[in-house]
Length: 625
Ligand code: G6P
Image 1 (cartoon, protein in one colour):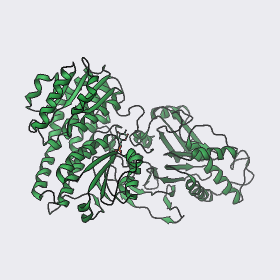
Image 2 (cartoon, protein in one colour; image 1 turned 60 degrees about the vertical axis):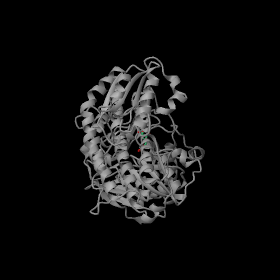
Image 3 (cartoon, protein in one colour; image 1 turned 135 degrees about the horizontal axis):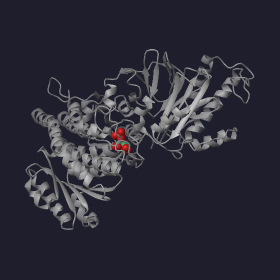
Image 4 (cartoon, protein in one colour; image 1 turned 180 degrees about the vertical axis):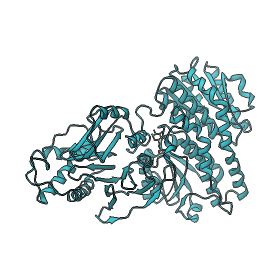
């Protein structure tokens, strides 16, 4: 339960466990949040057991009911699964023809039956047979196989069945025929091993078991694992035993607890100065050059690239949007931003001279992963900006810039976003340095300015948080909001609107301020709250245009909430509310201006009594396409 509750950000619409003990197997499941599973376990306590699997679900096939919750049972097996089996319709027909009755709508139950059918035929071939009552107990016609043999046959069945599955999977199976072991397989969905003293763990994120062991081993695609308290054996797709890469987790379990804040989001918003500082830490070598975490791309290749494509989803895509402004300005290379799922399926023009930059907090977002694979197949080098060490995107990329923001638990992203933007600046400066667009002293100057940002974010929070929270509570009854920004304020406006949709379930739209007059202004009516992100007055061309845009909405009755630099008095006459941010270089302003929008969305959602950390229908790591 402890492990599951640390993973609930991955999905939380139903959950369940299967436990194997001396008396056999118990399965307990519940629809709703993980607390419901706790109640179900109290109501029907399972027998003592030392082997088990569990799952929190984010529905893909079938509604979030108890019946559709994992584990799914077939014969002697129980199975949990993350991912999507794309050919499950065909396989469902096959298992139904074999006489199996399926009781759920899920693709996973089909896999459970396939696995049980395969295991059964292997047991038969080995001379074991059973009656309706199963392999064990009085109904069995032969003695049950030895546990070691059953475990080995389950490993073989797992390899055979997963080879027939199309799509993505992290699959675990247990059976009372082989008590004390869990058999697992993975393809494209995250799965990591935790190796403790006399106890072993397997999970889709180290957060599940980091309070028990920090020794982690990676499982690669199409590998099968046999896990017991003594450790793990891993086979590749040819059936050869392989030694997985192991590493030690550097952060502590307490880093994923709330630390005195009401919500994880509140905590993570306040961790933003640290997250930005951590992303910047240790980036400059003794020669004064910027370094990345893992670089497997030749400097000559970086010098030859003629286009950058950023692929990402959700909040991470808005970080990519900021990257466009910075990288184009600093490096004079065209940067396109593309939602990963659109990029993948539109036959994009990608060549060896294209650098693809994938941005992802989790490093597991399936849409982004597919885009990475597509880009690499087309000959592009991929540089990943990710937060989760050892994640799939990080492992498949040619270069990695880790954001080092620490674990982000709240489903909607806050500190990871600021860390991603910071990483994009670092990347821009790195490329400028490699390609000779900026002198070393110019790069050093920008790094100095970046190094000042954490203190400015902390000051902004200290000075403005209470007011912004009050504003969130005051506007909790409104059903529509607009967000306007120009230049780097534009992605900030998009992110402000997304936060409000995600957390408070209200209609919110972000627009490029200049686009307003081309249509969206028709939405403005008396009293409509409109947030406007105002650029620094030190860039009058940008600033004055946005001040005009404020007047345009105000003249039509909007309630204007202005985010402007300290001392920018030009906005005062047109503002119903002003939120002041400290002065910072134009390109770096998103690190400040987005913070009040995060605080506002969280406060408004809290005032509505909503669950800020786990908004409805969302999941933190979307490992399906
Ligand atoms: C999900 C989350 C979003 C997140 C997006 C990208 O949709 O709900 O908050 O921005 O995935 O996630 P990633 O892990 O790739 O940054």
